[in-house]
Length: 351
Image 1 (tube, rainbow, N blue to C red):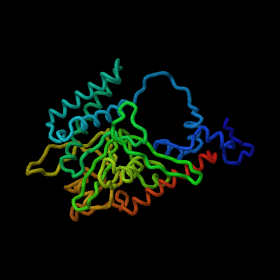
Image 2: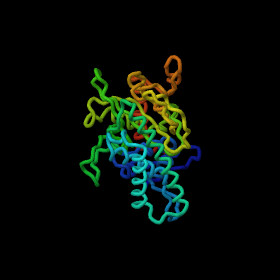
Image 3: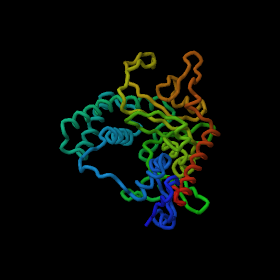
Image 4: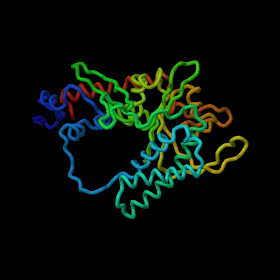
């Protein structure tokens, strides 16, 4: 039994029986970025949700996040199944691909849809055509290409597919010998070997179906850091899949806004039709060879950067670019927060 002592109403909430707490936790913490952020936001909330496992009663009803799960599933399978051929699909083939994948998902996961759900699925279907077209245009011009989808970070094999590729999590240790590992699944990993450098630069891409505004001040507090935690794991432990891995950055693709149709630049002497564009944000390595490879024409359409029309220089680099030293400081800071989390949790500090 874990007893929370509150004899002094002004005293911080603390678990007194830390031996019992350690029996519940074990000597090793294996946490997702979501759980890490929950602890940083409210240690007591983390204690209740993930240790005591207290939860409010919920109605037994089907309430799936259709937009998020369907969008992620279609994006993953469209790129995974088509491979390099995805870039060369015609608009008609892209439309057919979306229809086939949406129909497959609905048949397997959404039987007996209501009228409202049918409307939502139709809306998602229309958006996916534009979104995949945007990703297609990106890959056609980019030096970075997808190399992994739904890549697991875990030191345990997948029970359903033991041979599936995975990356071992980074293991950190507090002063008392407790370890903490961050596990999870990366939506998409893009890679680019840089000639003459010898390293494989990796970009982590996440699809967001809601609003997203990446800010480093949130990362400093241990929030909004999922993709960076994944990127730093790839950088340190990804050599089993990627030769000499190096961090190129993280990008959040806002996959479900109401996109604006914007004129594209002239390509091969012909002006293309208006195409939907989707917002991006994130943090990239401050290396011109790297971020220029992501947006070869310097339009700002495929990277979270703004370029001066006359000089071609980046105008918002302070908030969206970080050199290797700065990325290293962010990585070390997050490591410190994870170690502090383990030390505080095992000592019963849950205020």
